[in-house]
Amino acid sequence: MNIPAEVDRTIYVDVSVWIALLSNEATSPVLKSWLESETGVLLTSRWSVVELSSALSIKVRRMEFPQEQALALAGRFDALVSAQVRLVPVASADYDHAAAMCRNAGSGLRAGDALHLAVASRARASHLITLDKNMTLNAVKMGFQIVQIE
Image 1 (cartoon, rainbow, N blue to C red):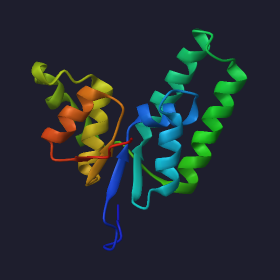
Image 2: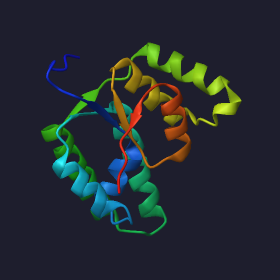
Image 3: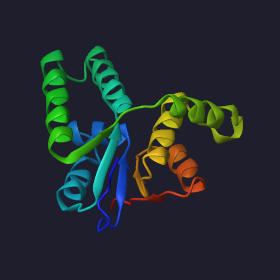
Image 4: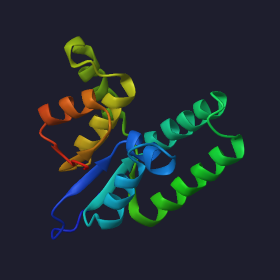
């Protein structure tokens, strides 16, 4: 993956942020404002597509919104990624890295979050944005700068 030299920051965007951006959650307005003003290169993994689809289906099953809305939100995600985000494939080495992180019980990492961190690390992201506090703690330990939203 080639990142132009003049880019100050590459930001890995966790799926928790995508879900909040697309649905009507408390953090949605501030995240939308952040996204509109962000000038860094945005990255997310192909794993985000799977996690987002799962999360939207869970919301449908919980009757938070109808299936049609979930499909529309998934379409908005696809369009957003196509227009503004570099979609990073998951490599075999990412699974190994994620597994190694999960073996440290003290990290508290779930498999999906560890996989996000492994992909972000391999993609050489300088920053990470997530709404997950445990993922934030682990990302800081790995040397990522955290994008703070206010």
